[in-house]
Length: 233
Image (cartoon, rainbow, N blue to C red; front, side, top):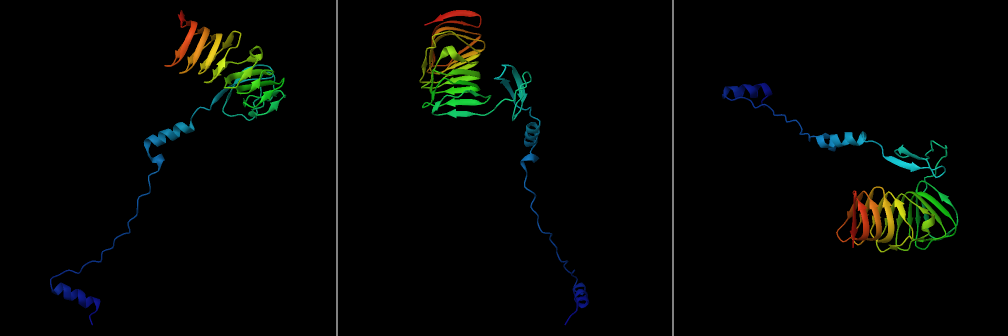
């Protein structure tokens, strides 16, 4: 039997050195790299937190006053007439005879038939029968196949004519922007941009400071664009 001291003396006597016990600390994995540790991600995060809220132009359906709000507002208040404005979106898919006023969006489905109503909204999407209806789109009127309307009782700022639809208003149209993927035969004065998509066709008279005709778009009209008057056949 040898005790510890005797063992150490025996090793020294033999000319060796006792081996020291080796202690190895447990390995620890480095924490996973978070997206925010990346410089680009950090920059993107900062930008996201400091982004300017969305600006929305609103036209009061009560008095017609136009104003701008920042971000989302549950019940916008018109600063002129102090009317709280409805923001509801509405989908009409049957017979309808009630007046609707909202700064949201109204969608009239192909099976809907309007009976003497007045629709006032920020955006109106029409694919049904609104020949007995007055339409007031404070921003955009979008016409889809099946749309029927009374142009003498229709007002809009931007007009969109979808593909597969041929429109002949029978009167001159004034708008801000025209986006044409279908066919339109009219005299149009646009204050900003007219875009004729592939498959679209414009016939008549056109005035606009900016005209874009995509490849495959058709133009048969007298055109005044960019300060120049031309005839396209």
